[in-house]
Length: 86
Image (cartoon, rainbow, N blue to C red; front, side):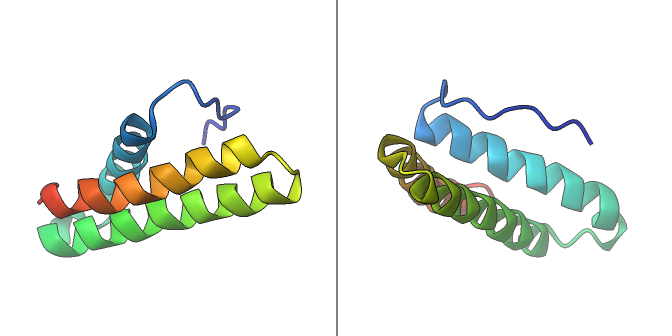
């Protein structure tokens, strides 16, 4: 897995889409034979939300409050994106 530093160069909406799509592809590749589109979307959403929450906690503990706000917006956008991804 290629782990790169996470920069906040994207809007929260763009980052939400990126995270959702990233997890969606991974889940589809692993469980694609199951072909459960709705299930894959739900799992991708939950993975992306978990990541966003982890980032909020990390940035909060580092007292990087602007970054916390960014990840809160990403979390909101993940939920919005997931509604229309199916």
